[in-house]
Image 1 (cartoon, rainbow, N blue to C red):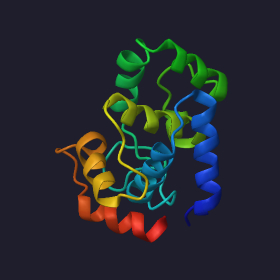
Image 2 (image 1 turned 30 degrees about the vertical axis):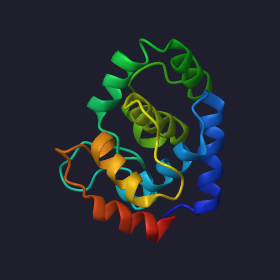
Image 3 (image 1 turned 45 degrees about the vertical axis):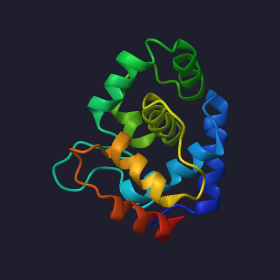
Image 4 (image 1 turned 135 degrees about the vertical axis):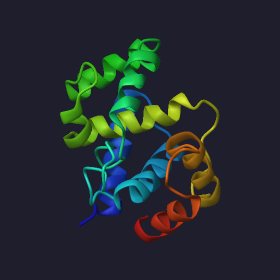
Length: 154
């Protein structure tokens, strides 16, 4: 089972607007990230032995770093996330089961990378950006897998 792409797009857009992290580029990249990471919402836990959780497959260590490093220096985002989700710090339950929270953390992962997000619809640039800043060179995912999942689900 996966999300309806129109409803999920609207949900991600409204969530990002609520915390001040919205752009069409961010929405498009997050939808494609979910497509690759969880087959567009099919999985809430990483397959195999990995620790990643939620539709964006965020690792608990990444979530912790976002709170301890990025949000510490950006309290306005921390406050908005807490107001929207009730989460006040790293929270494995929310990372797996709170879609608003997952969306915020995934967006912050890309926000942390700095620089402009790839243009809407530029799947190759989005795949390259995802690999460099989200999956990283150490991750098992490939640009080709990202592109295939993006085409399939979005």
